Image (cartoon, rainbow, N blue to C red; front, side, top):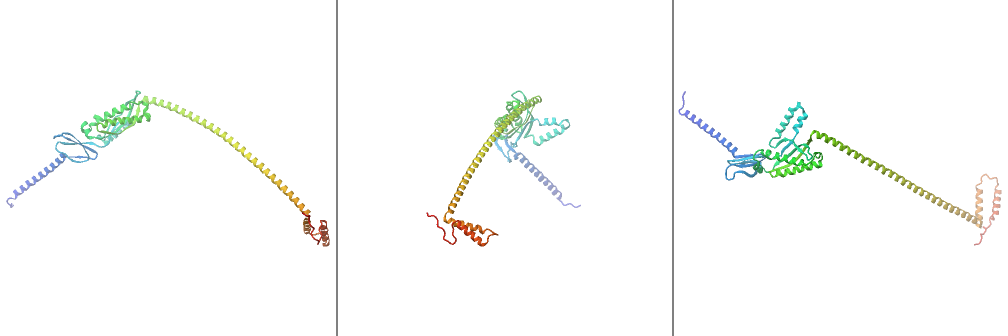
Amino acid sequence: MVQVAGVSAAVERLKVSVKRVGILGIGGVLAVLLFYGSCTARVRPNEFGVEQRKFGLHTGIVPRTFGPGLYFIGPGVTMHMFPREIHVLEASYDRDEALRKAGSGATGRVEAYFDRRDSLLGGATHRIIDALNVQTSDGYAVTTDVTLLYTIEDPVRVAKDFGWGSLYVDAFVINTFRNGVLTTLGKMNAESFYDEAVRIPAIQEAQSALGQRFAERGFKVERLLLRGFRYAEAYEKSLETKKVAVQLTEKNRKESVVNEGKAKLKQIESKGNAAITIAESEVNARIAKVKAEAELYSSQTRARADKEVNVASAEAKRLKAEALTQAGGRYVVALETARMFDNIEGAVMTPEQYISFVRNAWALIGVSPGGPAPTGEKK
């Protein structure tokens, strides 16, 4: 086999140069990654950033809060993160209550549920502690299920007072929360937990007191919630008996009030019916009186009218009689007598007898046929 002089040496030099370039490239990438990891810090949207300097003229906590973004930090500088979310602190007996109700057969599933719930909610912003045992002013114990919602308002102050991570929860939040709730709710007596007029102002007072103490340390109390409470079993039974007696007394009192109201209603109804009867009788008497007056007036009016009609009829007859006694009245009588004979049909008289009868009638009343009309009396 024929070999060209110098080829092997060139290949060896090429391999060496490729290795050198690869090593330099990998070293450059590592250097960039190292620079990026040590000299930059990313603050996520749900976080605050607080800078800590270990070297230089000004060491310690930088009095500035960093929002979401990518920041360049120099050597000896560390960016610590604090959550922006609402923190939940539960003093709850949910797990114990669920285990007691589930029984021994479902204990594993209940424990798995609460473990998974705690992992989903996260340990940084969600903490569960034992329910608070409140000693009331009358000496009884009330187990309360209370939840505190709070946020970090000044992460620089929190970092200076409590350091990094979630140390502030154990060092400040839990103890302050427990003391504030026990002190405020302990002013109530046991029965007042049932009375919202007392319970709600007490919760508001506890929230106000916690808000003031939390604000002094860089936190903000969003809401304090009393989710539930329970008494000791013996006190629960005695309280139930007492409440039943109180409710029975109240029931009897309200029934007596209702009965009094019904009696008053019946009395008012009877008075009203009597008043209605009296009013109806008065109205009927007035109606009868008006009817009697109307009938009297009608009869009187009819009597006067009949009297006037009779007087007018008599006067008419008198005037007619006087008129007939006058000279002109004879002609009227004769005329009327002639009309009477005109109405006779089937007469037994002959025409000559008829004419003679008429003439004799006229003669009787003083009328001469064919003669002048008799003159009346002189006025």
